[in-house]
Amino acid sequence: MNRRSWTFIFIILITVSSCNFPGMPQEATPLSTPTLDSIPTALLTPTTVPIETLLAEVNLPTEVPSSTPAITLASAREQPVNCRFGPDVSYTIVGALNPGRQAEVIGKNIDITWLFVRNPSDPSNSCWLSVNYINVEGNVELLPVVGPPEIMVTSIRARVEPPAMNVACDALPQSVLVIADITTNGPSIVYWQWESNTGQVSDEKQLLFESGGTKTVQDYYLVPRVADYSVQVRSTLPNAVVGETTFKVICTP
Image (cartoon, rainbow, N blue to C red):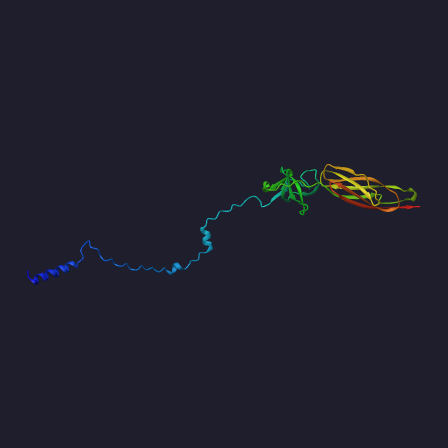
């Protein structure tokens, strides 16, 4: 084989070796840099939703109106009902609930036989109504339990009979009658006595009250001479209350 033939074969071999054959590694193609799509302007702008629309989409619970009044009320059934200072008929009467009127109930006794109300005759204070003679609107069970009030002497009105005396000077000493109207607000035993401005003091006496009200007591006082007198009638139990009066004694020689 001549030189020209070897040269031709060598050129063919070089050409074939430069071709890519299957199974041979190929050069990796570099990846293109990813690009972010731009966000539409409409998505960047917040949308205002009316509050009415939001509320309409929320299932709110339906309020069921209650038939129970906000306050508890008492009314007389057929006739006026006495309103007493305490939860018993032994307490004094301090007001009345007439038919057609109502009283606000603010308490009850422990067995719910009496209700504590704002006095329908004087709303500045309170009193008790028996449940036997009233109608009630409201939930009595929710009312607080109120204890009975303290029983006490509420007033003493004193006087002397006669309120003035004119006697012969040699007729002295003379007796006058000390009288007092004592009032309590409930059943009690009252201890009382009188005392004059001359220093004379009576023995302590007892007065039984089966129920609240007024009772009259009296006692004799021996006045020794001509003078202007004052007498105090006072209770010592269950509490101290004083009633005072004055009288005059003159004489003719």
